[in-house]
Length: 305
Image 1: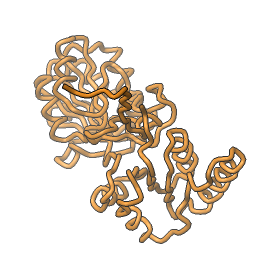
Image 2: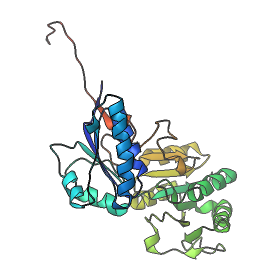
Image 3: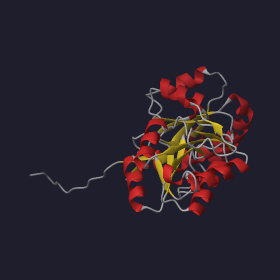
């Protein structure tokens, strides 16, 4: 049967809506939660928490099920990260600095991703219209989310056709395309540097590179990716199967925008983050991922031979 994980510690930065999101998800999954919001949203988080506490009282539920750390002191974060006797898992919500700090200092298990270095690979079998629609949406719909595309890989056989068309569309839409030597001849691009591979821009910027094959694309993603979300645009089933089999990202997509990397879009309801680790939860962390399970075995004096 499903069982709650126990006490969830959620550490987040400026967005006070996480107070309500995390509080509701943890309550729904049977967990208690300790929330530590950012200093910028300290008063807003406090007001939202007061509403949650009132709701718990009205429903006859324990108010302590959703707690908010009542201080801006950063020492509270360090304390929460080491409460192994009290807290069962930590979920950080924020930028690279916060998540990196949590992953370095936590003594409690962590559900987190450090960065969303999302790749889209245009295979030589890609359909031109599909490639254009998916890449444009993946990059420009919302640039500041972890599912936004940050690197475009183009098979050499379509670099002068589909690849060029997609890159020109990105440039026309106001995206700065930082291209490798093969693609930098396309009008409007700027030369890429070594620092552009494996970089999360969260802006109207994308890196672009020409690759020799699906194997070359997989090698690039393995080296520079963050195991968050990666996509292949292809009509060749064997190329898709190889991409799916060899990459170990939490979310892999075929002919679909990487902006679908979201618990709500997966039919899971709300989520409090995307986990890229390999233990327990991977991908969107919703109510079900905030539970574990136990086996119930019933007998009637049953013995094993």
